[in-house]
Length: 289
Figure 1 (cartoon, helix red, strand yellow):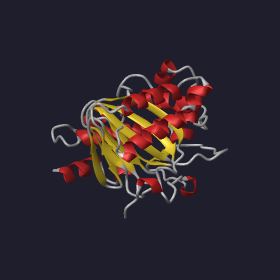
Figure 2 (tube, rainbow, N blue to C red; figure 1 turned 60 degrees about the horizontal axis):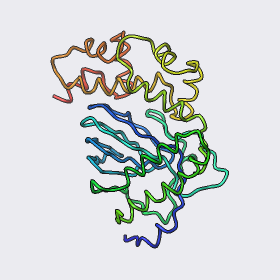
Figure 3 (cartoon, rainbow, N blue to C red; figure 1 turned 90 degrees about the vertical axis):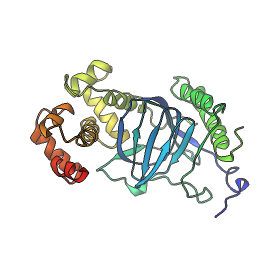
Figure 4 (spheres, rainbow, N blue to C red; figure 1 turned 45 degrees about the horizontal axis):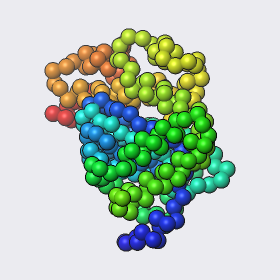
């Protein structure tokens, strides 16, 4: 089905829910999750893979994709990669309250909380690639800076800026509302810390307490409000994903892999691995051979 630009691009009035940028190290895997809103992901350097409901999309320099809500997806850094992300709704709704942006599996999203695109927005997944001289990445840099500013006027201006970004992406021309997640910055800080947490050493509680100026209970509460699971559960998802990679080598023992991924008890590791994958570590490895 054809969707002439004038039939829908002129009608969108997006609202930014959160935005950010940062590097991912090679082989980093973001565990599978479901979004409540839409997410624009743009890659400024490196390569990554996004899998959405079993379909794989490869992103490299200057590529972008918009991930819709309600579909299970996971992302993998194939090299070191710099990413920009913007969670948004296609239409601004006055008084809208947002309690979370996603939920990680095995959790399931409350379908009543999903915010799909209006019917006039094309249903297919939007994606593309920009020329190296595109101004979009500078616009994303500015948007990220403004969104994370403490000045209300800076954050409010993100709506107009993001509309320009979408128009440039979707028209192919190359040419905010105040956040309803007032403490989502805390959740993002926790997630960034967990993504970089070494596999051995400090306990999770001490690790976060030493990095961030809040009690562990408050950090855990904010993280779960935004992402739908506890920091412990998210860290376990990261470690299970790493274990899947290590199990591809037939030389490493199961206990060795458990310790390498940060589990002090191989039996607990095996039980947790089976809970998330449906297979024991050894059976998972046998399927790969």
